[in-house]
Length: 379
Length: 261
Image 1 (cartoon, one colour):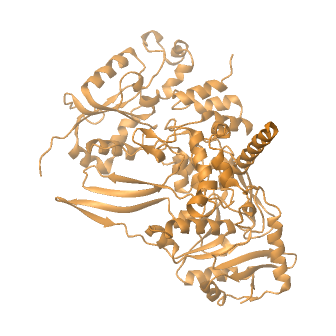
Image 2 (image 1 turned 45 degrees about the vertical axis):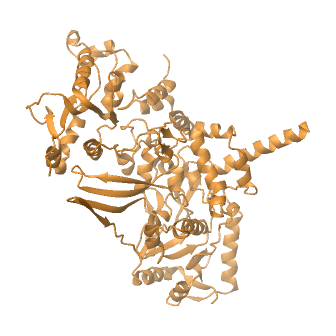
Image 3 (image 1 turned 180 degrees about the vertical axis):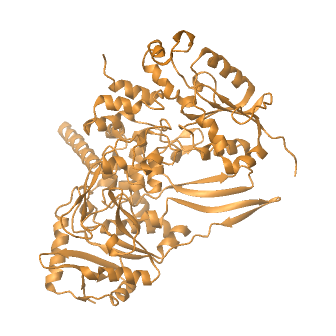
């Protein structure tokens, strides 16, 4: 099946069809001065006419001057909020005489439809799939939320100030893993979407939408928009040899320089779409007859995260930042076969003091190059 | 079931507004259960009936601002097997510690008609400056769920589940939009101890730092960022001169930006 085109005025049909499948539709919408992901009902809930201006430590919504539905990039939320929720009750227990009665939490997993998943986010979901669904231990909560999810991707028509998906090979065109992919095109005459299926359920859904075949003109317009995005990335990161570079620079003075600015507040890990760490805590009521076990998003930037008998393994900010960045860009590759970074830029934008991972990599490289040159000079 | 002796609880007040100890009475749904598990032996806000010490658990509210306070806290410590301080006053010196940045003798006539009646120390200090404290529960006021957690942990002989990480973690778990990054609102959240559930940012306001410093605060980084964003040094000083102004990292930071006369 070739690509189709869907008129902007018919976008509501996509929402109606997904709702008719009994799906909980989650997508971008404006709230509190940002574009967040939340349950939405119709295309009117989309951030129509809004774009986000992003830089290190700053995010502002501004009017775009046209009525695009997806002209913004990524915001403070990611899909992990829904697939890997911030707080989950794992089980509870009651004391019954001399024994404990354990009750499983029994999660209600919605049949999600995610609208507006970007290329970097599809890759982030794939990386969390690898962690939670593959290997010996499968995470039941994640599986429940993920297994019947329907992903409507959007090819980015604009690059944000913190975006570097091109460097990480994750965008701006959606790669594998979507059910449907949209490219929004607005020209003088028309406002429409190029729509492509990436799965059987995506194909089945397209058949129920008022679409027409896309012609050479529409295909060219959509490609041109994605190529323009590709050419205007806000940031870049040289990934060649990055794994080895960071491994070799564990004692670099740069970590202490970063620590002067790092707040160890954990915002970068909370907004990162691949960061997956949690803490598990037991709570009891006053009587001790009822207990619950809760799992919550945690961060390698807290002291508790690496607390073992006698104290925290990483008490300094430099050790914590180094751990996070080295895991994300280097040891993640050893562990899971890919980088842990998808180039979405959230950690840059949402750092309250604007620490920029791409800039820190660049400084690391320059220091390594200088040292290398000095060694060559000595020889 | 074996009948166990209920541990004896005492609540003590020093220089404070009573808000934190009232959090105990705010535990309306849990209050009867609490009274079943622990003997409320000394709690003047709730009852004039006082059971003599020693006490298994003392909750101490307020800071030390008089010589009498300084002597009395030692007596409270002597009577208490476990001593837990509650609130910004008891853990940092409270809002009344603003006197620490000036000369209290110049302040007294501004407040009291008969200054000669006032006998006070020149500084307001946290309880831990005077006696050994077993656990500090931060907040202005404290969070009643956290208070229940501390008491519950005490009853069951386990560590209280109180995170010392930043408010940002609570904010992000709630799904709030960051008021600093998205609105340019100064917010102390990245420096401040979690526990309130990120109340102020949830209503689009910056964190005021009621819960005091988090486990590894970096105030100079945040205030340098504020200065770059156009805040003036007086505003930076004032941002740190709140309910927990005397907490060491905040005190040092406010003094760093204070204009020298």
